[in-house]
Amino acid sequence: MESQPRHPLKLDEHHRRSPEATAMSGLRFSWAAYRKASADLLASAPLESCGVAYSIHDPHTDSWLVDNVETVADSAYEHRDEVSATLRPAFIVEVANRARALGRSVVLVHTHPFEQRHPRFSTVDDRGEIALADYLRRRAPKSEHLALVLSQAGCRARRIGTVQEVPVWQVGERLVLMSSEKSTEGGHARYDRQVRAFGADGQRAISSLKVGVVGVGGTGSVLLQQLIRLGVRDFVLIDPDVVETTNLNRLAGAGPTDVGATKIAVAEREILACSPGSWVRGLRADVVDANIATELVGLDFVFLCTDSHASRAVVCQIAYQYLVPTIDMGTSITVREGAVTHVTGRVQMLAPELPCLTCTGALDGNQIRREMMSPERRASDPYLLGDYEPQPAVMSINTTMASLAATMFMATVTSMPSQARFQLYDGIRGAVRPTQARRVEDCIVCSPRGALAKGSSWPLPVRPSENNG
Image (cartoon, rainbow, N blue to C red; front, side, top):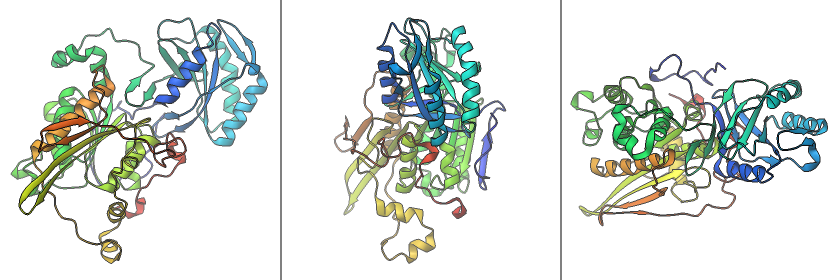
């Protein structure tokens, strides 16, 4: 499917990609939804079982979002045994009518309970899908429908009635491609020492991901140095700023001759110098603008490296609303009466079943309002006091947080056994400690009653595109 951008991008854009490279597509389950569906449906072994999900399909990224799979009741089966299951026509009519009313895409799920490897669609499946696909296309023509088969070892999905496979992701504390079989390929010599740590499958996972970095300044620039060397090869970079003299103490790769250049240009140069075959899409823009925020929804993973509360609010919601796992990081140096009193940092993963930035109280509503306004509106608003004051910053603290974030990323997408998904750094004591926070029940951002897996059916807290400068 050939996609078109939602809005024309009127901004400085650096874009080096191979012609065949496209945004990540696939069927994305929240961690709990896939876990529950697999357990519930396979529990009926030795009989085959069926389930139905009503997913939100985004045609621009060709992705489907699922937060719930409904197990088909026994009364809905016309026939059911160890090798096949047939649903009653009346039930299929109900499914199609509901999908059309909701504006959703149907995902028809069934099990192969005896298959010990990644399942494959059988000839029985092929024959049965022909009529189903034709009926669903006629009854709910505005949606793209899928079929998915589950076994104990994983799953496989395709556009219903075709042989066109669709990758299946489970998104949560880890990001797992559930439709992928184990690799038998060896690792590239460049990554030999990493392959010895987390295997060829882990290296393949890292190298296959399309990764976004929002903010390529002090923290983002040193993070990129690590991601390139880990083997990430496909980047989307977003940053509105140019290099200033005061950035040179902490902007990796930048020198005096770069003053006045965009931070995006410096970041792209560093990526391609280290990994000439990489693909880079660089946007000199603000992620809080509507047409820029939507650039993130088709990515596999995002790093949030900005101190802007507005941008963090936007990217945080995208993480849950579109099931795009994200790692947020930040640093702070407090100086009072000429003396450093606190050196702190934090790294927090944002994904289903993990608390969001709203739950952890990391966002300042008043600051979000300020940053969403134009300079003229900020000056005239009587409820906003004070001016922005540059904060102390040094490269070593940024590098510490970037390293924690890169390790958390490795643990999320490979077999690296690190369990921390929220870490706090105390530079005075020289301590890093994992911490946990409670999710707020019915949180507007990260709960099923809020934005979780709602995709384009739920609004993002963005600045309207017409405000783009």
